[in-house]
Image (tube, rainbow, N blue to C red; front, side, top):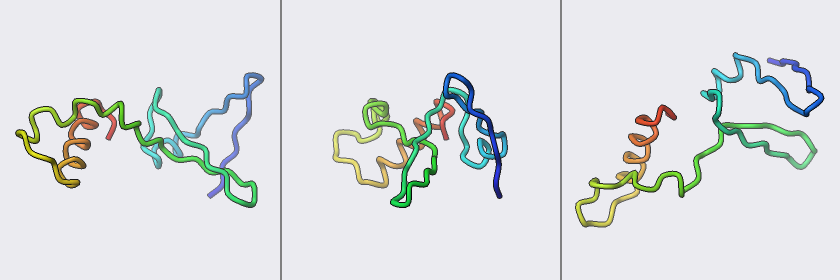
Length: 85
């Protein structure tokens, strides 16, 4: 599938609804642009920085080191509470 959009005088583009739905992005969320070796560019939904997950595990680990799966689960729950997943 191929879609076309226009660049504004401020260098902005509107991401078509079908693309936003496919990526699961909403207004205010970030995307990442990735360049490949041939000079083409793709973009994807940005993964939140580690710092933005501060406090996600509060009360979840009960004084013990969390497993990777526990960290993933807690992060998913925190993102769902913020409407990000």
